[in-house]
Length: 500
Ligand code: NAD
Image (tube, rainbow, N blue to C red):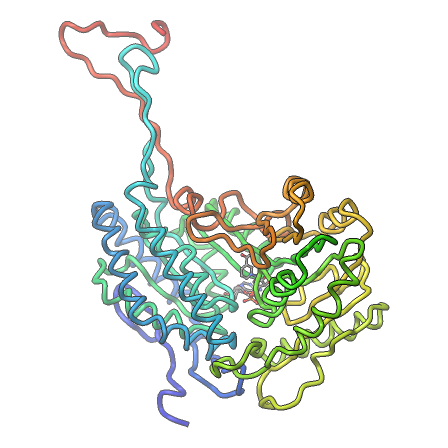
């Protein structure tokens, strides 16, 4: 083992890399493809968080006073810096999270796209004005930063998810504290090297490694004004309630169970491509992963065989190997948890068409699970209801689009969903009636680009304003409305209430 292999990660507070001062423990950061240790991450304590919040609060007046154009230029520079290190960032994502290098490159592309979208802040942060709301009286709404904003991130997008928030928050003049997932803290350590190189005022952007204690510290801290959370549904609920208790602005993006409806008129080969990417990309560990296919009428018969063949053909292996098409899941514990879902699906009466638990030729120390297809499920079964978060695709059959929509809408989640069909009328009905925040039409993973808002409905999201796009600027600004008039000799005074 080399010296760098056991590096203990630092926090980044007030413009400096500092060791955690109040850590309650340390965790190994594991490469899920090999079981090897990549680094160690401190479980920082509340004092570490407090130092970051103090730094962020102290930096607020100076950063807010930087012109919006100068703030945008810092983001242009960050974009160039991240671009220059994009391959290194992608490799880091694959090493610590496991997804294939091609997928990791796409993730880093999306991360950088978030910075690009935030560069538009001199336009997107503009307010509104209306002259003569009463005689000689004008009204205008301006947008101002919210204050100190914190983000709590999940393991499955080590590069992108923190950047759903960070660039938008600082573009709007806020200061920022990030808590990355303790399972994948290395990619943000790299990104923060580039943030450090921007020479922002000390404390504008801070990073505190850790787990639950830091999260709870964020939720309770009176010095934090807004919290963005992304992770599982139970923690999203906890975050939403506890942060609201201390009066913070909160957006909490939770878990998902995404359905893909296949109509009998779907173009089957393109549909199979879309489903395979959606179900098995990132080994099914995306909040936008399609994990249930609802086949309508003849679609089942047309789809099952080509879908099974395509899944079977996926090459399972270490994501860093360019030839791999399906990497490991995040940990051996996750693999065993997912295998438990498969077992219980069979016990519930579903049929395994392709069993990923039987795998050869992979590193036995890696957290590998092959593509799995389960047919003949009913909407009530656990496998059809719960988020499995692994490379497991479940098929449910429906007789009509009506029935398919009812199945999709019976889920307590409502993140993303797709329909595959050539019929405009079916699409119109589906997009109008389905209860989910993001819809794909002949597209498997309909994750909105940075310039549009990202979020689900129902248990997949608690809050109001979604992530990035125009909602990003809304979330990270407070509106202030000014009603004004000015007196000068020779002009009528006007009365706000009387002379309308
Ligand atoms: P997680 O909920 O276990 O962890 C998310 C964050 O919360 C981490 O930073 C972790 O340290 C912290 N945390 C975990 N348990 C906690 C607790 N009891 N108290 C306080 N903090 C706690 O989620 P994960 O396993 O890292 O990520 C996978 C989940 O995230 C999936 O459910 C997936 O659907 C969801 N996700 C959702 C979206 C979305 O946009 N809706 C995007 C990505 C991931």
